[in-house]
Image (cartoon, rainbow, N blue to C red; front, top):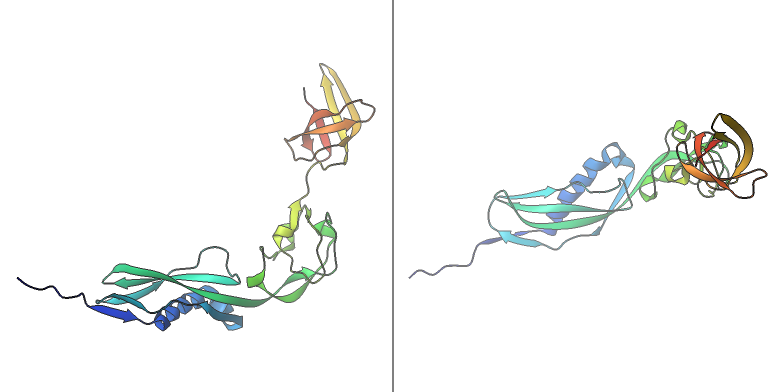
Length: 221
């Protein structure tokens, strides 16, 4: 009868796991590495795994990049098999020159009439996608008020609808061979193909009309 001994183990120092995660962060930063500040804010403890050929494989962070807090998963691999997985957390700051608002602007301001100026900002701390080309904002307006010097992000804007609430519009109606045109005020908002309520001038009740082009609607049955 033979005795079975305890399996042989090896210890993986936490510093090696952090180094593997840091290498992945550096790769993700690319040219931004020199202007970035990266700090470890959550690191694992030493890990014990079975003896064998050891490898540490850091995985690319998921989600928006860069961002202020990033977790990098690291797989601890022995003889080609993943034995453990752990995560290293980093705080990241990346300074970039980005477009900012030259002045305060109210909700509904049309992008075409706004002025932007370059300014340094921490893009990792931003909530939204930076607008790098003014043409990205063609036909758009602010969905909320903004302050001067704030970075210009796409999420600040919404597309201007073909018909907006309280907009004065042209209303077309067809009754057999008879075609009528009148003015009215849109109660709802929508784009080409949408049906909205419109209060036609002189009518007692609003009617449903389909948006056919900017500021033009066709009454539907």
